[in-house]
Amino acid sequence: MSEDDIILAELSDEELVQQMHDDLYDGLKDEVEEATRILLDRGWVPYDVLTQALVEGMRIVGIDFRDGILFVPEVLLSANAMKAGMNILRPLLAATGAPKQGKMVIGTVKGDIHDIGKNLVGMMMEGAGFDVIDLGINNPVENYLEALEREKPDILGMSALLTTTMPYMKVVIDTMKEKGIRDDYVILVGGAPLNEEFGKAVGADAYCRDAAVAVETAKEYIRRKHNSLSVG
Amino acid sequence: MTAANPLRDLLAEKGVLLADGATGTNLFAMGLEAGEAPELWNETHPERIDKLHQDFVDAGADIILSNSFGGTRHRLKLHHAQDRVFDLNKRAAEIARAVADRAPRKVIVAGSVGPTGELLVPLGAMTYEDAVAAFVEQMEGLKAGGADVAWIETMSSADEIRAAAEAATTVGLPYTYTGSFDTAGRTMMGVDPKDIHGIAKDMGDGPVAVGANCGVGASDILSSLLDMTAADPDAITIVKGNCGIPEFRGAEIYYSGTPPLMAEYARLARDAGARIIGGCCGTSCEHLAAMRHALDDYTPRPRPTIEEIVERIGPLRNKMASESGGDGTRDRRRRRT
Image 1: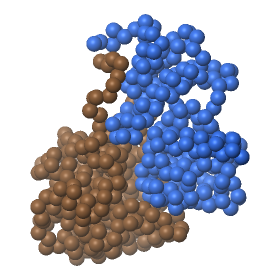
Image 2 (image 1 turned 180 degrees about the horizontal axis):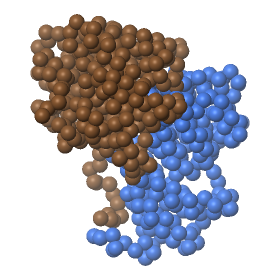
Image 3 (image 1 turned 90 degrees about the horizontal axis):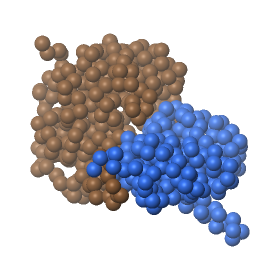
């Protein structure tokens, strides 16, 4: 079956959404863009395109990434395809006041240039409907504190790929404790040399093994936060 | 004409070689701060780097790795040292060379070359040619400082391995390379340990040895080793695994592996066919001495199964490479071709 056999505009809504999931999985940026526009033209509200097509498609990618079926190169292509769709939706979402999942500030710690994993987390979080503020690489504690003050996020994410930089996460969290603001945020940490015990020891709420786990964990914490707010 | 290759010569002489332990985590114990560039210590604290090499040689290392892991311009840029690539790498190799030259036996100086941290085109912005150029620049310094071999390590991308191998060939250094299999038994970029041998076979004379380093725990890297030695039993295979997993005690990081555990890891590595065995993060001189003792006059046992490895040194942290990857059974609407 050749590519020419699929005419996106001729698919029913249901088929088209399924096709978008497949095209996201395969990292087909142009096809995802086209399908996003078709759904909007058919009168879909932007929020439904986001959640049913893009977020759901990236959820499937995330599961296979978590399970070691997809690896970083494939997921980066998927995330780029997702971003292409998001770029169309973003202004429309803002204009229609669509609900937000939450907000995250994310950055790689001081001394560390690695941003592949961090970027993936950022993109997957965006794909899951979060607002993401990316501080880039090599962040001293001051950068994190300023961003928390400025952005008032729900979640702080820190990344490190080197055994020589991962202890810096503790410096950041200890400083937050000293300032009495630690408990105002959910803190998620990640990076190849880390593990769950390490995450606990530095004082983070959770260690996330990969971008898919980061999204699941973030959603879980936001859910808990909402529950405790509605109870309290 | 074959260029000088002291690593190959020593392998032929001794059969199995012991590489050294960790650099970064041991420098912490000497006062390196989180986020500081270890490479800058080649100029500011050469005596500490000298001591680390010396302690490893005293513990029995046949191969010592220069303090140049993050020595490409892409990494040094963060510390505003991108214009000193040649000097810092030359210094790194010189310090190790001096220690090797005063040792009572033959010790190989391996010029450590880590990843650039950049993604190659089409996933990222770095072209293959730029990657080769960055590695050439670093390796010229290492060679000038007296490195015997370019030791390309902790790699996750096959393209980046090829770029570094091409650079070594350009510079005229023999080379080895190892991948970090930290993601579901493969590298982050999806390289399967069984495919490690073929990555740079056509570069120059081909690698002297290939293998695995870092990754996750000791059991996981031995699982990768089984895959690598099964794929090519005649290749010279390196395994340089972490000393267990990192833990905080108070404000300091410790690795969970004990000297007896690393000794058993070394024996299992030998049983599984490794020819160069060493430690990565967390491996101290004490651990390395235990590994030396374990390997001396050791008669390998039969090749272990993964179950036997787990029984002796503990469970796997990640899934194995043979369990990862797609089997094409995912339900999909229609496959585009």
